[in-house]
Length: 209
Image 1: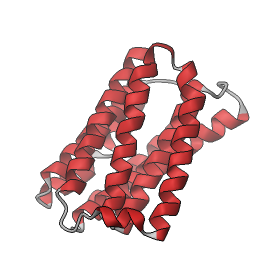
Image 2 (image 1 turned 135 degrees about the horizontal axis):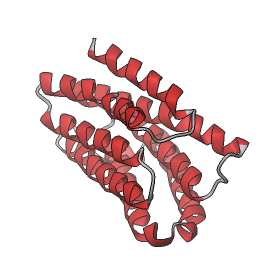
Image 3 (image 1 turned 45 degrees about the horizontal axis):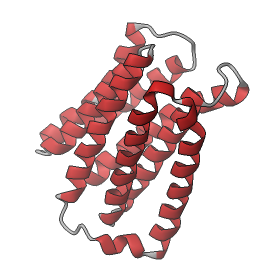
Image 4 (image 1 turned 180 degrees about the horizontal axis):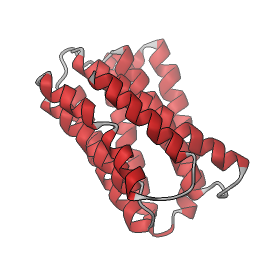
């Protein structure tokens, strides 16, 4: 029931996100999409997972508001959320850096590195006053991704990859793509499904431990 509620809220928000506007109702729907998963984590006695999800939910709401200050606030909330995920993974039984040296991990991590560095080079020169916060955030999500791979858990690894991909597209949409173009609208349509799928996979993987 909680998964269905989260999925339905996410689907409703996705439809709303394809339209222009920044209403508080739209922001509320976005924030509520993760609330059922927070409740699920608490019900399964996983407070750190609940904390990471709650911070991401807060980031969703703040980031949905217009303006540079809102973007910075959302960035901070998500950075704290990633630190929460790092704690979840670091305390997971079986965490082993040797998972990073497996062939598939090497390929995926190399791909992520190319993606992260490439996007950083494209957006940082255009980030203005947000250049330092964005650069620090990129470092945090890179650390979260590496820690996720070190768990050796397929769901968590896949979730981290999708999270990094959704953030990369968001960065391009915010700082690089021209608003209203076909490519920008495609980016806008992809961000939320990738993000919610990432959250779902991370949650499933973390609660399966």
